[in-house]
Image 1 (spheres, rainbow, N blue to C red):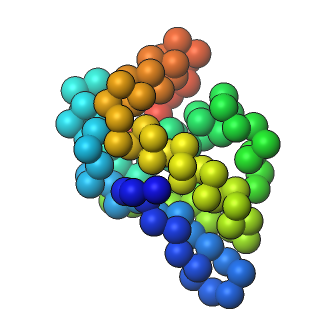
Image 2: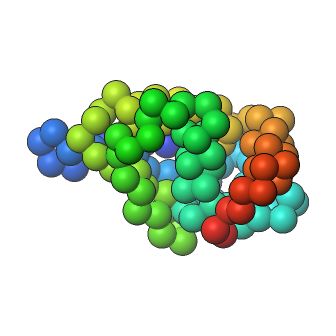
Length: 112
């Protein structure tokens, strides 16, 4: 799940966090014309949910900031699945290239 972290903020409530600017693909993201901030990572999450894991849709909420991605909710298993999918993108340059290319091909715009 690295570089993401899943924490229990209060009993039964969870947050999935990613400190923007700390992933192995940050340079590549910039090279491809995006800023690897929390809003960009929200776009990655939304794209992954929409294209690869539609069963996750609506099972958590997003609350990113410039320096951090955050998804939160009470469904720990949904956040864990999102974490696995996002970690694969955040640690693999080729996978990141695929995600950005898919976004561009489908007219998806990152809010970075």
